[in-house]
Image (tube, rainbow, N blue to C red):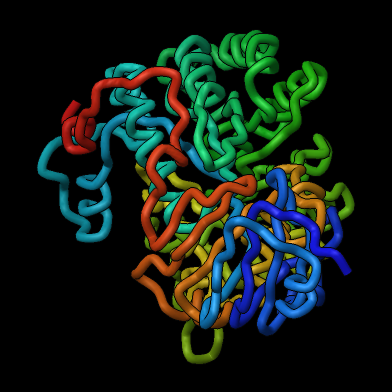
Length: 454
């Protein structure tokens, strides 16, 4: 048989995990199954996967100018991170120290999200973009190839649209999916004018629909009500936008039910989601995205007593919520929720490690949730999230031989080579010069420390 031409061939992987599954994602008992190929290989041409299989079979059919020998290493799909807040100003590290030590911060922080809103407003476009590109580089180095990026630190219409325009203009090897977080928290200026704020949010949707794939709303006792989220969500749907929901993080506000009724692509957090809400999400095909980094950073690891009872009956134990979602038949994904307050990690690798430790998930479940199901949360599972012929060639070669070892060993970056859309963009743990970023301008570089002081 004559060999066909390819652009890149990867051969001799100690283990190749395909994370293959249906476009609707992997659910229920199927989460515990993971297709692996010993001495695995794949071929790539024009940014797409041509073939996947044992090295002997792929090598007989394909030849390429670039051959990557993955001997002794794991090969997987690129990681998909379906929930982040990428653009922001400032840092909230003092707030975190005050939380964990239960002491007052060295200086007055004045209110979490609102603090970040002020810092974001003070930062120039160039400064926000420089930090975003640096964070995207870090994500790419750690194996993330697709990222959802929300606004949310503007709150007012014009400030939110500014962040959305910047997000939509990003050009990077990490494929960024932009989202307008139309309802995050109510600004103080609208404390007695909620209806006016909702009208302004609806009014921003026409312009936002040309820039964002999704509209997100926060349905939570500390944010917005079920009816308010339904109003803005329905308007966004009418404007041609898909829907996401921050749901039930601090109490059951009916967020899971709102997500189901809006046919949202995903509902995230879900700490207090009801069984009825989870069942409705399963029926609607809405993905449940859980965020173990938030559980860690917000100090929410509620312990059990020896008899199995919860130490704090007011706070659900997160493994129970995740398992309830799985048992309800919901497609479950994992994400960083990268942001300066509740989860300042850009690494999906640490998310995988925390999901095992905090959520008691098995290795196969975690891999499925961070690849194909993450893609499903972004309505992209037919295009990426698994190593299958015809799909976008987003691939990671790891410095460990097996998929369990990539989760078990934490605190170091285990990604050696990253391929995004068919191009080798990380090699030997380093960005390939000129491959990651694709700016139209070159903003002045300012250190993260300088941005934090603004």
